[in-house]
Length: 119
Image (cartoon, rainbow, N blue to C red; front, side):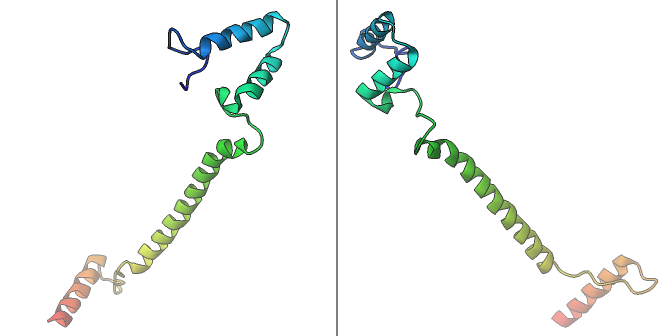
């Protein structure tokens, strides 16, 4: 199972009970924490650890999510800037008001001109 020795839920677990006894025996014989861990890793491989070590190729697993998030964020910011610039370029121009004319009158005049051209 994928639980640690401390949290194993199985009552008569064929793996955790003997390993706990083995670890207690090693500690009683005077082994320290690092010695016990190294012995277990040497015997069962790195998958015996609850988390991968933070060295070598395993660093990729720790760093890759952050690199991916930052990269995607940078791409999104850049793309949103391009969309904003494209939206401004494609927006219809509002005609400038003639001197003394209200802006609404300039828009009305432009609409009338375009409707006349449409017919």
